[in-house]
Figure 1 (spheres, rainbow, N blue to C red):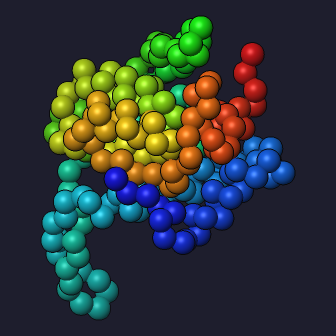
Figure 2 (cartoon, rainbow, N blue to C red):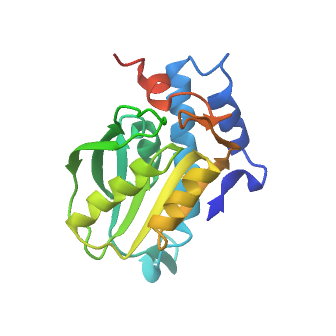
Amino acid sequence: MHILNKENSIANLYLAELRDKSIQNDRMRFRNNIERIGMLMAYEISKKFHYQEKHIITPLADTTVFLPTGDLVVATILRAGMPFMNGFLNVFENAEAAFIGAMRGKHKADHSFDIDLDYVACPSLTGKTLIICDPMLASGKSLVEGCNSLMEHGMPTHVHLACVIASPEGIAHVQKHLPDATLWLAAVDDSLNEDFYIIPGLGDAGDLSFGEKL
């Protein structure tokens, strides 16, 4: 598991603005900050890729560089994950993309809920690296069920799970059900409340990005 804000960096500024209720209602700024964190995280994840030496010719001399090898698929859970995914696609410009439609079902008397999966669009994952972007890792249910739905499209060589803010409960759920995946987080918060929202969190990332849904 990798956590960006374990060390101070410019990511702290983007996280602070995402959380600050006096700033976050500027939807474009909110989306841009999520996208920026996606770009920073994409850079960190790229350090784990396999690289191969390649010979190139500059205008002045021959030289060699090490370039990433293998195919990449970046997936997200609609709709909140779109700005986060854009950050990854800005960096991994040749990656394929996958999309998952998932939402919380009706809350039960004990405040628990099921996940409704109603849409999956995915290329073949066989032999590829898969990155799933989901800005808020709350209970972890949607991320686990979304990942499992993607596995019907082939077995990737490795799965990276990227989130902006996570709860300890969500981390535990993901590590239990997806033990071979690598978790990448910008921040880990204190807990979930009784309605399974992250505290202190930032609110509803989808609504803050695109407006409230009916």
